[in-house]
Amino acid sequence: MPITLYYLPLSPYCRSVLLTARAVGIDLTLKTVNLFDGEQLKPEFIQINPQHTVPTMVDGDLTLWESRAICMYLSSQYGKDDSLYPKDPKARAKVDALLHFDLSTLAHRWGLVFGPVKLGKLSKPSQESVDKFHEALGWLDGFLSHKKFAAGTDHVTIADHVLVANISSYQAAGFIIQDYSNIYTWLQRCKEAIDGYEELNGNDAKKYGDFVKSKITEK
Image 1 (spheres, rainbow, N blue to C red):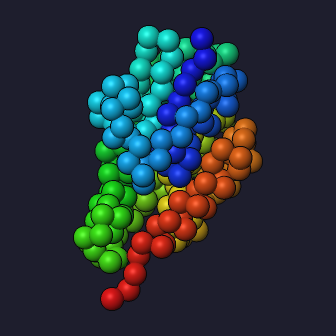
Image 2: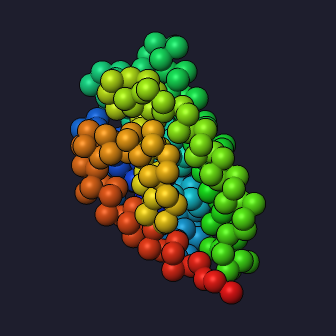
């Protein structure tokens, strides 16, 4: 039975799932949900996912709609080995820690930067939110010190898939990732090492950046 992914390519969270699926070698049946047109609120989609968010994955009798959980599942269920998501508790904990950091700190603080602008409450991000976001980037830059890939491995893990989808989008939106030398070096390494990076993430990260810039106005 095919695995169906309801997604929007503009979303970095959806793109991290695409990268993971490519890495484990599975094909997804892709169904676009246009959030801008309110397609996520259609009754047939709410029946699948009451939270009406993307990405949403359906694999047989399993339905998931948290991107990091989907990446964890795909790598555990379909990975040829455990390199993407280690079975060793200590190695896995390092990956999990980065996934939680991305969810609770990095992506959360980005939401405080762009959320009010996207909703039309502000014409540009508040300086406080930008400062907090850069604080989080500084922490990530420290985490990546002397590491080839995010979890301290010499190969890509799902921590890289999740982080690279977000970081590349922030860079495209005008946040100067080059100022963080470890993040910048890691990002360039991921672009070379991740299968299908440009096809599945790079092009749409640029579109996401353009979308963010289109919403920010100076007054």
